[in-house]
Length: 339
Length: 291
Image (cartoon, chains in turn purple, blue):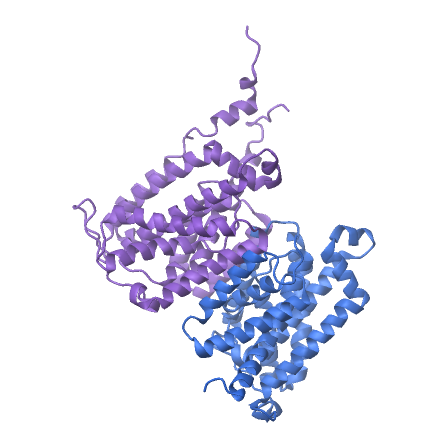
């Protein structure tokens, strides 16, 4: 009979198991594949949805995990989209996968450069700086007609077949859908690994108590900048895929509308939860796709009420509501760890 | 050739008039942020609501311009106090993200409601005949309405400054901005202070919405269209500082006016870049207190 060690403590066991796969975690991917076979007519919508999931995951890393409240995340989405679009349009480089890497690198460079200076600030100043940086890029894209197409954007971007085999057809986006799904899976596994790593835990620590993280000697600024850069790179990938899938780029990739949309998606699903991006994107995109076309004003009114309700009563979003509900339904299944 | 006295004078007058409107709208936002630390992205929506009340009461009730401004101020202030007591006050202790989401949602609701009940089109402001036309200032002839805006703006900034610096209520607000808990323990009724200040700030926004409708336009998208500008003014001037907002409004009003004339392409870019540089140099704004 060995004495129970510290590792047998329920809290320690919960901590050491928290990164393990749960039984329901393959579900989103099975559903996404099922969608491909069941709704071939809605693959364009599905592609857009998966891109927004990827974009929302990138925001979740910065906002949900590191607690960087930004209003300008579309800056990186647009940077990726414009990089891929401009390289292909001007005939410099258009191989899809390597283009995405270039797009991610450009977005990461902008994230690093802006993060180094912006992340010194907090609160209102940080909000304003992220907003202004995005507005600055949008204006620059608007002004650089010769390169970016200005207000009209770049249309008719030609992307060669993926692996030389699979044609990108904007009217029948089978390739795009699977391509996004693959990219999303890779990025998701990366983010999931990252947030359960010691690095990810230190981000959560910074979000919860910056002062204490300083006190225990964590390099807070460096961690935040690295996280912001990674998040920017992922957003750049999402933007790059958007440009490839739609075969055009315009100012809508860079605007406040897109930044607000991705924020709403993430918050609707539940931020800092990894799967909030999926739930939020499905709920938001489905509602907006079917409602906004019929009653655009009612959609905006509903969205407004939804945001007010979430901010006041349901800060965990849909997933948070689900968790609360589950906890109420079976309070005895999860005994509290002894303190 | 371009820089004649007439040109410079008319540019300064036009820019200052635009700056006055910016000031009247933004001063409430600045005080709300400084006093309550609340990121109120629905401030533009209150300005829009006030603008609608002013323009529509003139058109449909035959009220004069000045009485309409008063009606707009009072009604918007009353509505906003209800919102403050019922909804905003629940979020004072919440994080910025919740405040941002709540107030963006509120702005969406205002936009949608006005689109449904009044319509998506622009609501033009009909100026009374005394304010139309030109006024001879000796050096230069200029639009009477711009001169009127400058006079109103200067009167408001003097009144606000006196109210802020020389009255008991102003002292209470300054005390609460500096140290909320200390002010509370001295027996200042913070809830009442917040409600009155919030209502007053929204009323000022309503005035700005009405006064500026002539050149900013007034349609349901107003609530978000100019929000970035109002926020820049507050951030540059420093939240909670009336003098700061005034200076920032004038700088940005004149800059925007001049740049639109001589650099119509890159003007906005320049303002954003300048704002970023300034905030990096002084995160608390020109006149804000370092936190």
